[in-house]
Image (cartoon, rainbow, N blue to C red):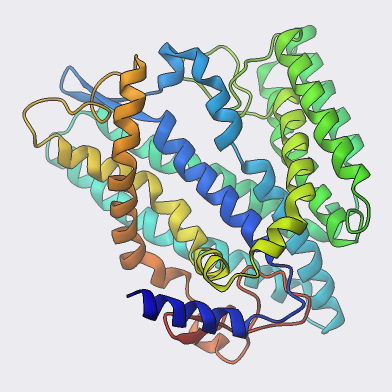
Length: 401
């Protein structure tokens, strides 16, 4: 087995162009895995009164808030997304590819895998209701499946708007977020105004990524250090003196969520994450020169959407199978109210990962390029310096539409 993996890793490494920035793919993989493991750690299903209910260990153990600082990695994903989209659009223009063709290609890669999730859960939800399941149970399950998809809608909108937003200044966008928060929290403005920050807040790391594509952070470390230091200081000040929650993810029942919609504290935290990502990209790129490390990152990027879309389903499948046991299983069905629950939950993570591997094997086909795209090869993550490249996976070349 080791010999086969080593041979595959060597093929992936040899097929990767020398000038490719491998740190981009590594950062994307880190961001996806952060979301996956974060959800698995801070999301729990408990059985009460014959129904399943969603909860979080952060409700009863607020001291776990620093956990959200590690696993809330969406800003890094938007940073990489802005970088890749800006470079991809510039490359398309040079090659004479129309905006319509470019955006259709990129959005198709995003939404083709979504169709499988929607279809399966439509059938599952209908089956549960017809079988007599409580509506609260079905609603809880659907919420866990659909709620992460909001990110795709925002990401798709920003991708489509790349020609318009790529050169926006992050400073002005931060000012918009600050103004909306001041209106909502300081002057009693309507809460719906916060949804302006869904666009403005995530545009901050997205436009930083576009600036990175233009070379803004290529030769100087000082801007990245300022992002890291300023973001940390601002986020800490807003939490300690500004009244913002310490958790960077939503907590059920909390009056204010830093993430839904994004607050100024979440944006400041995201700036710090982006600064750190830009600072570590060079050593990360060097680390990716080792074939076995690079192969893991490259192959994960080929199925990043499948992993993201099915990770909650994997957790719920394990939880549902666990209900067949007469006693509540610690860390799975029990109320997350103690450090013992966290310890037990950690033991379940490999089981969730195994279930996700089954989902990956079943549904990754939806992330493959369409047959008509054969012969047009581009980067694993769409960020190579040339117009395209070939990436072998499972012993063969896979073309990305």
